[in-house]
Image (cartoon, rainbow, N blue to C red; front, side, top):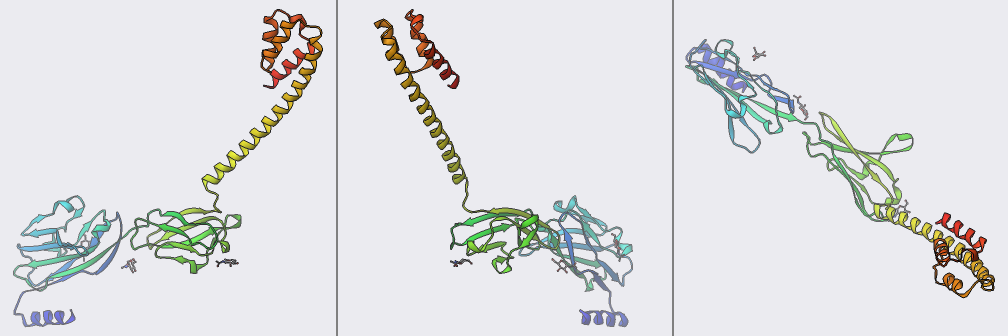
Length: 324
Ligand SMILES: *[C@@H]1O[C@H](CO)[C@@H](O)[C@H](O)[C@H]1NC(C)=O
Ligand SMILES: *[C@@H]1O[C@H](CO)[C@@H](O)[C@H](O)[C@H]1NC(C)=O
Ligand SMILES: *[C@@H]1O[C@H](CO)[C@@H](O)[C@H](O)[C@H]1NC(C)=O
């Protein structure tokens, strides 16, 4: 490049030609996604003001074809549809010798090389173009945290963390929620900072609890958390709940059975004493009825022998109803 400049200077001094020198003061720029890229380009020309000034901005992304961004020829400009809404063209470049443009709302797909080419007829030789490499930076998106593997001792357990977006590619760190809600580091040897994985080869050396992954790059960071717990999955919890309920039901049934059998014994005792007093039909009614309080009353009254019902049997039936 310096040899080229020397050549330009040399020819200018000799005065046998028309030369142009196009310059981009910043060869590399970083733009955060959504922000504007200010692409600066100026030129010096021996021809002071040419009506035939030609300015062309083109763009080439990594592994992609060249694309036109802006074109000016003899005062007429063309802005392709893709850039129409977000490109600010140069203002009177023929007089200012300033071909700078601004592209707003930069996306990751806009990263690449932008070339500014200027021909100022009859100045067509010299350094006619300059390039700017644009890097679009994007904050990491909120990562996804997950636990993979078997909690049993001796098995590999992996905590994974990944941000779908982020440029440059985020790096990941893991911490654990320790006592007093303080995040404590996890031994570094177990973390792959580029993949985001935390490998736990021996679960017995690890603490259970809440683990937090932070996805970082120059623009920002985002995080997610995941719980590492002893295989107390939903199934185990449901099993425990059902077990407790069954146990309670069993106890209730046992109590019910015990109180009932006691009542039955009492009732049998009463019945034998009644047998001596009551007529045969009345006794039959007692035997047919199920061993429930209401049953007792119904059958007894329908038989039209309420007088025969001993008061203590009636009281028993009431108590039983209250329990049920
Ligand atoms: C652009 O960002 C990268 C990090 O992605 C950094 O290494 C570089 O220095 C930055 N360049 C400028 C010109 O800010
Ligand atoms: C070129 O024009 C832009 C505005 O479009 C201005 O910000 C910049 O300073 C100018 N550059 C020079 C070298 O005059
Ligand atoms: C796991 O770690 C514990 C405690 O440090 C140790 O006793 C055990 O042998 C280790 N098991 C394996 C498979 O490395």
